[in-house]
Amino acid sequence: MNAIETHGLKKQFGKIVAVNDLNLSVEEGKIYGFLGPNGAGKSTTISMLMGFTKPNGGSAKVLGYDIITQHYEIRKLTGYLPERPAFYENMTGADNMQYFGKLIGAEDLEQRIPELLAQVGLEGRGDDRVKGYSHGMRQRLGIAIALLGNPKLLILDEPTTGLDPQGSHDIREIIRKLKKDNVTIFLSSHILHEVQEISDVVGIIKAGHMLVQTPIENFLRSSKGTLAAFEISSPMIDDRFVETARKVKGVESASILDGRLHLTMDEPAVAEDVNAALVGAGFRVREIKEIVPTLEDAFLKVIGEKKEG
Ligand SMILES: Nc1ncnc2c1ncn2[C@@H]1O[C@H](COP(=O)(O)OP(=O)(O)O)[C@@H](O)[C@H]1O
Ligand SMILES: [Mg+2]
Image: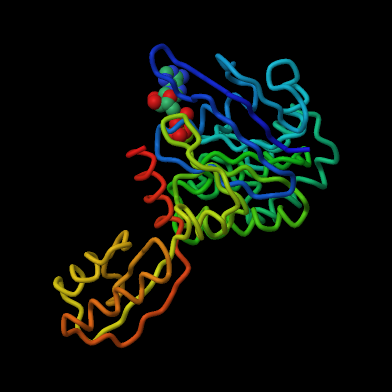
């Protein structure tokens, strides 16, 4: 069974089509990166999955339950971190957990609360009032609350947006550990490298529509047959060097990164043509090395391709 499955899901706000004919399938036990620019329809999708917003069309199941008729079951089994979690500011973190825990009928709260506070890195801070919490602490508390009911599925809406690198890193670590406990993670984000680092499967949504949904290795390896990326070092890389490489047939992009020329191309064989062109133009090429393409390389390519199509 898939943890999440949608068929032709649609949501319209007046004339704005926020989600359009969306087909998602999220396998159990995986980390699914739900990626898309601001306004793409990520939060609206999540809101429908949780049963907070009714779709205008299509259907969806979460953990086998229908989002329209069985959202009570879904909410009981699913942990959810909203884009902007709200707490009782004058209450302590632990008391907020107590309150929200009772609301969902979570068990063993006396034991679970300190455990979860430690799990999200808030040990020692549970007795402070939330109004004094930093943004990062609020996200951690939000995740702790989402975990109160021992969920099988955790839906996180942009959990690291606005966090510093350490804070984002810590949240990714929490997510990785949860995966080990067999929790399915649905992670919405617009931060490419973060999704690349952590996800098993990636779904890219743009203007409410799914552009591509695939295991991340496949995506990085092939968005048009093969996506290959190379780094070229040379004692002197100038504009003419970059232009010479860029003009070679099959080269998709060329840019200077950390003093080396970073190229993406249709297929690895193109690298030989680049080498020949550079040498032919009188440049010295010290090294050509194949590198793993980044999600950003693939993302720009997919978005570009679909635009033309
Ligand atoms: N309650 C609403 N009323 C009207 N328009 C909305 C509402 N919620 C979202 N939208 C619109 O739907 C589109 C998708 O928004 P959203 O799902 O929040 O995107 P994302 O989470 O990917 O940034 C946007 O154009 C947004 O302005
Ligand atoms: Mg959003």
